Length: 396
Image (cartoon, rainbow, N blue to C red; front, side, top):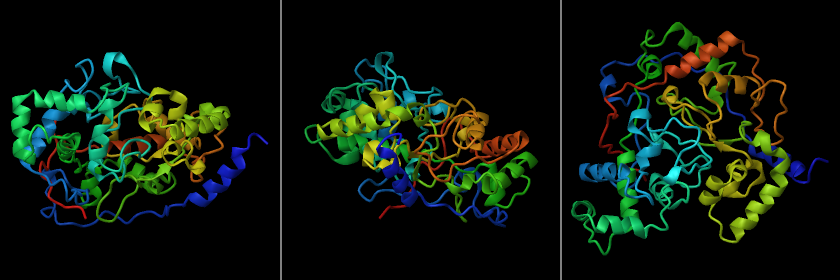
């Protein structure tokens, strides 16, 4: 027996995994082109959920934009939210793992903020349920903004007359009653404007424009929903496509290199959590702990090495890939999946691999077609910003 956790994990995984339906989707829908104008950049997206306790307003969005780009909210005055989520880089940073204050590096790749408003959870391990919760964590993470506590953020705001006046106007709150929750709500409101649909795929599939994608992209789409089985996790609905199932899967990235350490790591991690250790701090300051994935949040053995399915929208613009930024190109990603969860075909898969990951037996030209299809998911640009500044769909 390799180690005691394995039999338990295998059983848990078998019961936890649900095989997705991989039948080919219908042909592109015939839709009146005037019903969803291309220029609004929302084609292919569902209604945007807006929390009832944080409605969108122009002034709140503008405040959130300012907060998002303010470098003062860091221990050395060099790190804003936009450092890792750069407007000019599709709201990522182009690095394998992000760089925080004083050049410190974490363990995870910065996911794009584009369409993050549709996520059912935030961060690679889903440790926060919404954008409001997500916005508060990096500020006090020791390798990101590095502040000791949220009080430092509030102190900066309270000494800035413009901020004070705006918070008073937006939230009807005085300096003394201002909290980090107000800050988080403003940032989240801005982030909810960063939505991007209207890709060539959207025009092809939802608007019925058969010439919107190239022949290679159409072949890639057929593989995506067929032999490649990509749609199992990167889902497409009949009237919209977020290209994520919002679930967590072990696909053989990162975890492959630390299999022998799993029994020790899981025990040590649980002990640290029981003593008050913060998940966000532990996973961003220790590479091996980071590879535990969703397990770090849920303590469930079946989720060791599992990370959230990222959206594929605008994926052409967000290299490098995976939670650790270990795959540099889309072709490398395709090869990894084609090999069944390993970078090289002769490598051993990890014992915690999700059940749906297995060799695909695709040829090199087919892999190239899949890469071509990924490029059909790039949205139309509108300068460095995206359309729909004030979504109005309320969440229940």
